[in-house]
Image (tube, rainbow, N blue to C red; front, side, top):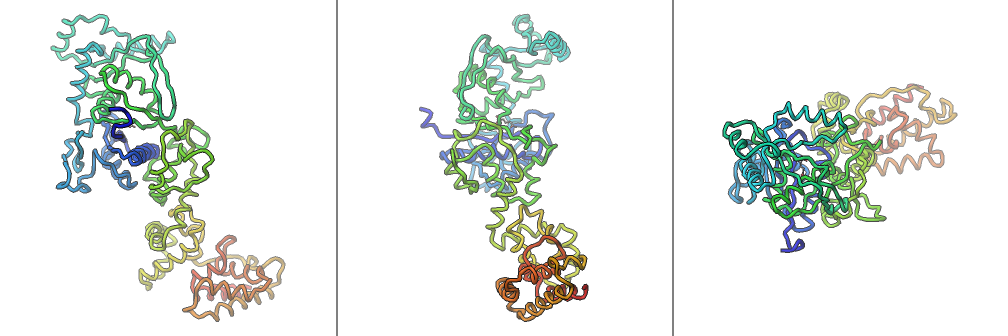
Length: 520
Ligand code: GLU
């Protein structure tokens, strides 16, 4: 079968070391887009052989985050409650309760495949491509220190390969001495591969250590398990973060040792902070769930993440892409080599674009949980205990209609416009437009009072309020509108007085205007 006829099969293979990192989401997304675009399969595999880094609950949380993102995968691990057992071939995960595995290439959890890794590692030993190593940690440490002191790159010195006879090895194995299996890396060879993003990459085998494949606790290393699984799961493209690029030569050597076909590689650019250092927790949030908690929309996060290192081509200025459009336009060959700067301002802007487009019902559904966490809202809600939930929601909808043009994320709701929820206070002087006198200010406020007073309560709509006030102001807009806006909000910056009056409602708006008149 030629490469072009082969069915595309890609995978996202996270290690359960915590939350889903924003970079992990990008890797998953690119795999998903590539699979969908090419009519391929997208699998989710759990790489949990590094027990020291395992975090309880991480598998479940990774699955939840990917589900939330809507990156529907076709094979691998799933939450049991989400899978209709009668329809598919479903196996319960042995190591994780509540998790099931679906697909013909399982298990999809590496800790459930230990026998397999052992078998393949021993096969390499039998073929002379790998060897047993009984060196104790103390010896390895001393060797390393000497090499470093001599300014040499630390590498295993092949003591066990050079010094142990077959009988000695068998003896040690029989005595169950702690043992690892190491790859016998061929010397003096040049190896080259073509990365779909990075282009041609060359390396000399002399820079590669005889890496451990199977550890003394019987667990494989990442390299061994990753290669065996990608081969057995018939993965055609390995799409992963740049941090795995240094491992790729080791993987290629393993494919060669096994005599297996090497998949195509695509290493995605590093994510950088604004100062171009590697994106780190210290400089901001890196977990996908942190962004959810701040009220970024899924569509906006996916849109933003898709553009971390990709755009549809030279000269394209388009920045808003829905998932369907991304599937259509995405190409690995257009992924950038250079690191991608993680610019929160860009995320805010993209999120703002999506917020603006939300229908009222969606807007309130997203915003309500955030309002409910705010002290100013809790106090307001209590003070309006006589209002029904529907009345409260209607009020919030108005606030949101006014705010949505400027809202970057739902965590910010109401923050800039607390005067919709609180009594206001301001200095009398703030009511004055330019050099107007007190009398002129009072006159303006009285005009506003009359205009607003004449609008019937059932006619209290934004367009009407605006029309009437503008007509009354004529060409002296500042004189009328400045004191009114200040009377309604007490704030230096706020939405227009029309919008504020509309949200506050006739009764409250008139009360605030008459309070202002009394102040002067
Ligand atoms: N388990 C690795 C990780 O946590 C996966 C690397 C790969 O995709 O090959 O990112």
